[in-house]
Length: 243
Image (cartoon, rainbow, N blue to C red):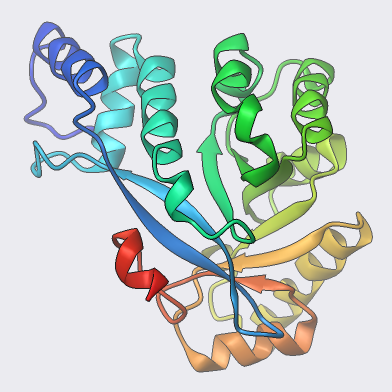
């Protein structure tokens, strides 16, 4: 949500352009863990804006969209994340978030192609897709270079199902917040159905938002492959997580 005290669009545009051009973007990392081995298999890059703590990350991206700079800010955030790739062990992937609109652009392909084999490209599932063939073709080019494709924040909604069925991702990331009370019987049934659907596509299954040991054990029982959440690791600087 864009804050009620947001600046005039001209001021916002200037602030966002400066953040992109002067690299005023900070990247923090949250581990993605293999639930069998408990080993970190990837770090998801998340953007922070340290120069203006009054704005949340969501505020920045929402305002960028309003002033026509959404793609520029997104590409700058991805570039900032890629600057840390050499710090990550070669057997560990870097997961980057990208909207479906940016994923089909030449700018995105050029930015990530050289290191595609190190990447998990996470597509935000709530974006509307006008042309799945165009999107699938763009992703196919990156897959040929070794990238893995994930659909992020998957729930029981129709948009999630369309994304998964049309894109056949390598990883399906389930949004645990979409199944409140998943440790009780109705919630567990709903979660089990989502896991079964995701597994039927041949994708690996990851679960986001794991906050308790009980949730972790349930996910293991259901056959979920990977997990992410505060119980397994909070977003933070990369170096302390590598020790």
